[in-house]
Image (cartoon, rainbow, N blue to C red; front, side, top):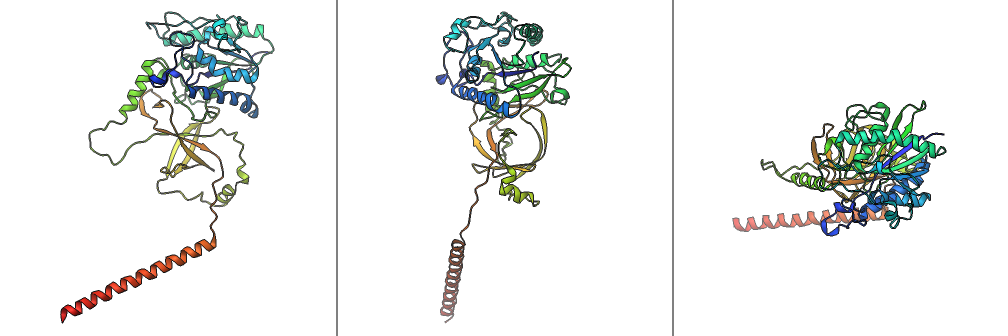
Length: 441
């Protein structure tokens, strides 16, 4: 047997992205080695649920071994998965963070014995020789991290298959830049900025590997064994707040999640509120992230009265005047760009807006946006900052059954009110006529 499936995940939301009073010092005492924020801990739990429950439901293989970057946030991210699957976390230096050259401090991660004190899932002794590749302590350029990942695969896969010939599926947990570089190297691209081609769910012009927090990529070995193909790109459908803190080499000039990166995101976010000097405040551009549910959601539309009713007619509900229709693209749970010919949104001003996507109606719920989500075009040009999230889900709309007696009573009251108003108006008109007659005398 040989290795057939490789998952690669980015760590969850870091605590040093929180406001300064809420930040947690690195438990290891190592520079740039923060733990997860509470939100990131929740993401890690949601990732564990997706891997252990959703993957089998999708008929996808479940990891048999876990490898992680030795930095604390990566181990903390995959620890709930390791506990659920009863697997140890093997540390691998080759999965370490990307630090640019001339950085003041290029940190060296903690060793097994230190990390075992925090995580029982990390062996106290080295079961796996973790120095397949060691990132340069002088920092790396964009080209050098890509080269690091190319060398990593050339050494890691033969080494792994010789030691574990019966293991077919593994998961690697790493950082945004390393996750992208590993994927591009494994899939056979020439650099980290290439667009994905059709074999990997792209069109060669617009789609790249995503880098949002706790996102998951999946690669499968081709039938002829010559190539690895991407079948899941930055999957985040299992995250309650969707994709956050996305990053890519082509859209950021700073290290992912660094102090400079966070300050740059805040600067862009603040600049969105600045006026352009024309004094026109009637309209404002608002960017909202629609978080679509996974297609495996266990909901039977065929038994939904609303769906049946609307399927038998050309109408789907009563869309309000603030309805929009756009032609957009979104990525499904496999990361493949999927065209939506018509997206209709109704009830922006309500807490639960409705979204019609082709033949489906989904109910939305406004959710708090954690962190900063930036929008870039395919050339890396900044467009805007996402203002909010709408979390979408399938479900029955609450049916409001109207009591006929109540309706009749309302009608009677309305008729009585109209009649009284008529009488009152008649009295006023009569008095006016009488006053005029008195004046004429």
